[in-house]
Image (cartoon, rainbow, N blue to C red; front, side, top):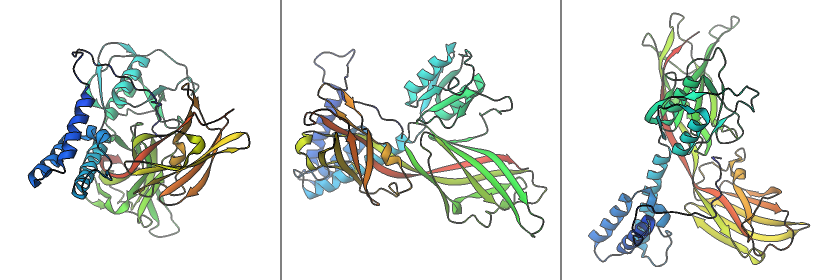
Length: 431
């Protein structure tokens, strides 16, 4: 998961505006309400103009659109509204996977101050992991001047500047910084950056077996990392779209066992995976792979939302739908000394995200919110149902007294997308 932010109360302040000026989101909501009504206008030109204008408002409009099944709208208006929603969600997905940017003023700051600045600017958590890693926490001053530099380029410059590295298994959606080893190379200039992703060749292994003629192989290991703010469920690498060219201009073919696609679930608490490509070894006089190109598909869980259920003591099969996800509160009942909350979540198009070997769905936050605002975490949970489109879970809460004044809050992504990401690696030295 990319982390879960408890947001039961949101406050906003409007500075530098007249007291009578309406909040920006209210103005947007009123504009959208007018345009949605216009989707039912008598003339075709007016209806098409409303659809175009809704799309031009951008992804911020999504929060104010009515449901596609709004009974107050005609069938044509609902169809247009569905197109608008689909277009805006695509724009939001593209925006989400663009690189965050970092700006630093070049003045001396402590490492902790710089990490806090980057986290605020990008939404990516960063941790000084040295103490937990058993390293001495030496004071470091950072004097980098960056102006809107994409996230991974900025991180690589920071790590080179401070002679630090990353630890891939922090156990949480964050970049964990540690001291760099004495033989570690510089990070900047060795990777390919594509939006929120970073690709780096990290090892080449050549094998030649003498007892079997032609039994040679060349394995290239590539690390793929992504900004921790993304909830990446799995990665797929179709082998048919990989091409490699040697330094002498000849092509390198994939090895004999390189068919179909490579697929790997992302480790919990890590924002990087490694995979091996099996290549046919070139001739011995080839010193390097000049370029290797491919397209990787990232399966993303996006558009997170809080599903809130009240009147729990009498709730039975209460459904809530948001975006492409439907959460059903089946029932709440006493289970010995605990309260059991049974629910299920389904997606219109899960894109294989719910397959049995993928456990990301069980990282979704499920809590009870008490009348005084206290948050009650579940003591345990168990799976009650699992299909290609739906997962059911029973959560147990150790809660003295009744449950009727509590609110059940379930936090989940509400759409699944498969995003193609092209990359190109250069000058990979061969052994």
